[in-house]
Length: 202
Image (cartoon, rainbow, N blue to C red; front, side, top):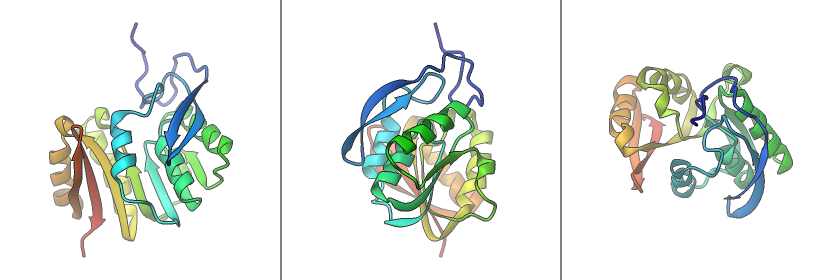
């Protein structure tokens, strides 16, 4: 029987019982909590694993964003690798946000702040954005999401997006350049996934 919820459902109706999962993040094995009704509840998905392995090391401090945080593998990695940073972990899925908060607290990551978009103060600029964006929400919704957040990069900041090649990574790269007026370069291509690096022109 298929799960009735999408990972971008705001309030999943499926069984929300939390269960432990052991994963490797930032070079160490940690235990996190996951549940049905969120993105990739059984493991770190392949795209996220590529992003975590291929993105350049984050700065030691700054203001970071994990866009579409799920249960938190990206935000937790950023928090573990850069304990001096503030890491905003944003999602629409209430269960994912709760799991990310719980996982950050369990790992002692005081700098990780999980919430919905409205929880991020207006005017916040990001030195770094890492995202495995929700491609399956559809092109219009995806473009709206990225047009909201990518221009909030601070001067000198960078965003790293992982997108499956056969789900439109090349067309997304062209859209970022043409419609947002930002530089978008292919950092690498691994296992059918592209990692795109987005920066301001100039």
